[in-house]
Image (cartoon, rainbow, N blue to C red; front, side, top):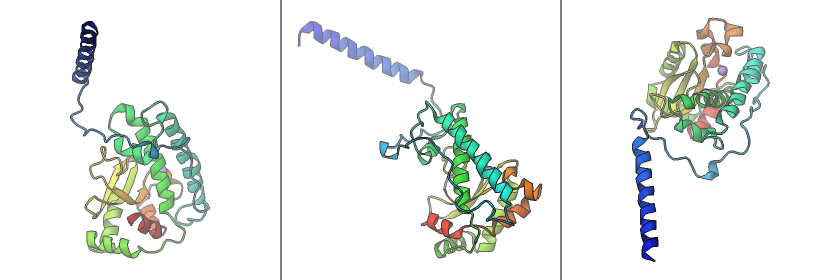
Length: 248
Ligand code: MN3
């Protein structure tokens, strides 16, 4: 290499290195939240827009526990609005092409994430909720039953804890039964449309097995202010087969 070219190259590399360390030094550090994990490889990329999944049963199928009109409005209007707003929210962001399961653990409390957090949570939670319900109800499968007994003592104690948690949500939110990283089950609640997969946003992250929407729009037409009656009714229409599948 000619001496002059060598000097030019060294000078350029030196300036480049200095610039990048300057950029690093000037980027404000977020001490509160842990650094989000890197985005996954392209295999998890999403094709096209988010869309409203069909209900797995007729809107009247859950009567008398949840009425037809509530189901139609809840699914066709509320859930649809989350889907529309989510598609709008992800446009032009880092999350534009990714699956929601990949997006949720990477969301922070930053204002920039707020619209994706609210509407992404809304879309995920409702998609999960429709699958959690079944006209035929039933009882916990063997693995779920064993885990409930091991974690809470018995089904009655689990139910009491879940009901109390669902009653205790102030304003709008969700009650959850989750499995934690240690394999134990726990009951938790989240405000608004947050859920336990938003690991940087919830006190107790976990994999949801069961979720109950306690927003007033989920029950007000039939139950008005009697949320406890809606929570009791929910226990008649839990799709325990689906819960068992999620647990495995
Ligand atoms: Mn809802």
